[in-house]
Amino acid sequence: MIIKNNEAKQKQRIELDSATILRYLIGNDEEIDTLIMCKSSEIELVTTDFNVYEALASIKQYDEFKLNKLAKFFEAVEIKSYKELKGEKPILKDERVEELRRNALKKKGE
Image (cartoon, rainbow, N blue to C red; front, top):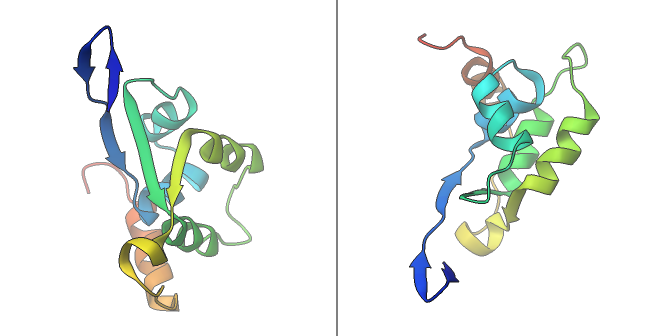
């Protein structure tokens, strides 16, 4: 919570899941790109280290991945510890990678 001029203002908090992170890193979603690239002071972007790990591990060699987008992501998003929030991290399996890629790369409205 941010307190300014004796009045409490609450930031909008958006939690980014693995598929959303992957969509940002290799997809073409203008809304997600704008949300992260033009970080608003009114919005708090949050995710876990495990979500980042799942997204990065789901990138294929042939994907159009730009390292500068990852750098901007770390600048704009608060990363929380999955282990501290939920416990041990599950092992990432091929089925989960394929599910994330399907969700991240599907077109809007599908």
